[in-house]
Image (cartoon, rainbow, N blue to C red):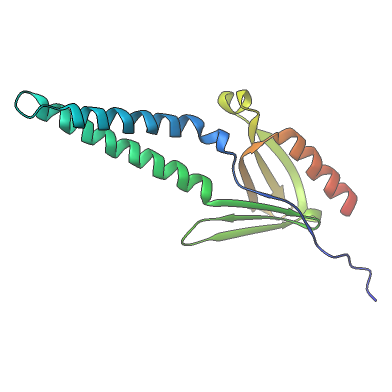
Length: 157
């Protein structure tokens, strides 16, 4: 009969969609404008140049969409009663696990747009040094999450 407690998941998530509202909105604008320019181009006049501009805008919009979606889906975060687990990547992955008792600092940063959308990044460092750092990006209500992590750390260690 050991006194060890079972580990259970308290929270699981990815970066918030709100953090990608503007990049995806801009990509949609490029895609729509590029499609209109390409379709409306008249090949008998100077429309060929407009068609190439439309193709360039379509490619730019597609690139922006794919990179934004990849950035969101490559990160997955889990918080359990004992650890914080950050998994990064889709094809090749990197997993960072931090025991709650090893946490040294929890800091929150947010740029102007993130503050406007109630988003932020949480950086967690450990006593092990700079190599054991976890970054949870574009989380909703980051200050509340930081306080919950402090309570969890202080209650379990």
